[in-house]
Image (cartoon, rainbow, N blue to C red; front, side, top):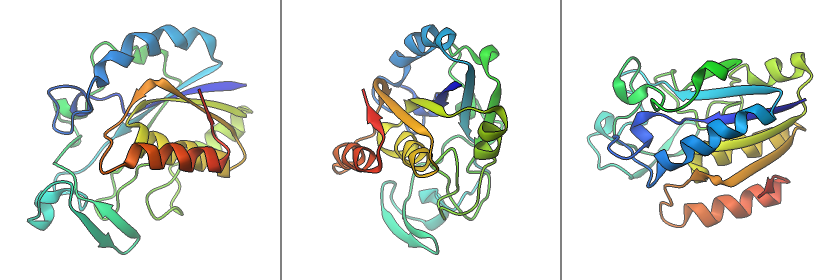
Length: 196
């Protein structure tokens, strides 16, 4: 069983959004076209409460500043994907009706959650692993936003958990913050993720 994992294709990560990824909207039509090739479709959705600890405004700091949190280094982001906001909604053109499961992450105000599998403490699970194991899904293909953060963390965790993990780089877009894209690609390859 092979699942397509569509990471955070939300308004705030697309052009015009609070944390826009260049060309983030361009991957939507080809992702929709790919859905028929998979046994299951899983969408993730960044879902932060207002005042989340990963927001720069919560620390009176500039966006893209790096700070230390109890669970490790944390990039401080512009306020984005606030629960119930237009920015948190999926891109209007994304085919959400095909989703077997939607995983909402980042809802704990004290900790960020890049990965579809774990919060950024790398210990608190989202529940996705259990769902995949229960359904007998062994192979995962990742697409979405952004390559160097949420796609990267999700794919590396998938490989670490023993899933066959593939990232379709053509169907992702990156923030590429201070060399983060190349670092992510190197780290994914080292973790055993197939990059195509």
